[in-house]
Image (cartoon, rainbow, N blue to C red; front, top):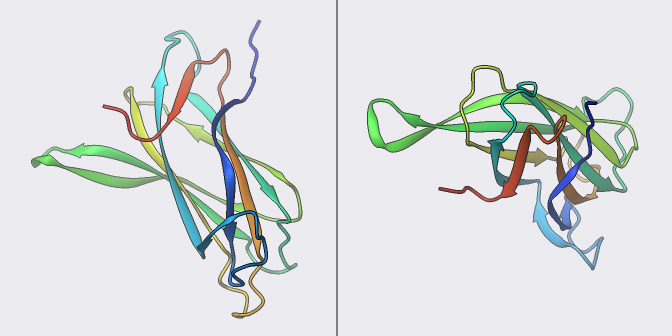
Length: 157
């Protein structure tokens, strides 16, 4: 039986937006924040996919605007420079509406293991300054079928 249950990767309170101090109990990061994590494939029989789950508080977007940008980057060794790594975009998504749980599916076909990825969440800046949505990023989780991929916070050697 295939099951999916989200595993907690990071939890805290990061305030994103253009009005510092709106959330006194959250660290203010400004217009974006980026979280590094390592994904390791531990079930060779499982699918080459996982889902990142982002939890927020007070996220609201205006109708007609694209929403807050989520970019997931993959870091891979540079074949031309042994001490350099390249960052490529694995996927992008938008956080819209007013929900507090957002799922970002990742297709990891043809990717090795472990994978070093980062998740950047940026405020929708197509809205006029002063009207940017202020919200709190609360949690990042990984949800893979039968725990095919497990995640740890930070880049692991």
